[in-house]
Length: 71
Image 1 (cartoon, one colour):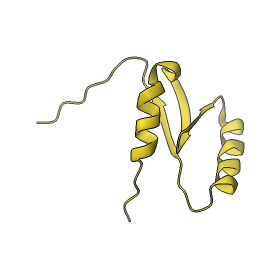
Image 2 (cartoon, helix red, strand yellow):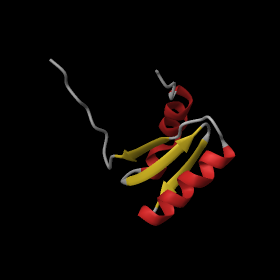
Image 3 (tube, helix red, strand yellow):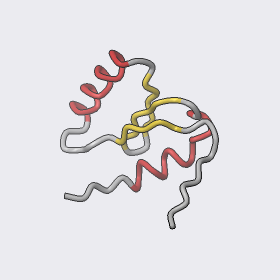
């Protein structure tokens, strides 16, 4: 099963400077900062109820641009 995160990637790309150095949950056009583990679990539960059947993107936004070189 392949999951399409293209909308979440566009949303994050448009606002990535605002979230540098932070863990975030992205769903559709919404970005939520994850402050700690407890709040992150609550946020994930809320998002699952609000958007049944959707899978949120959980990620860390690096402090600087990161390039990964592949041979």
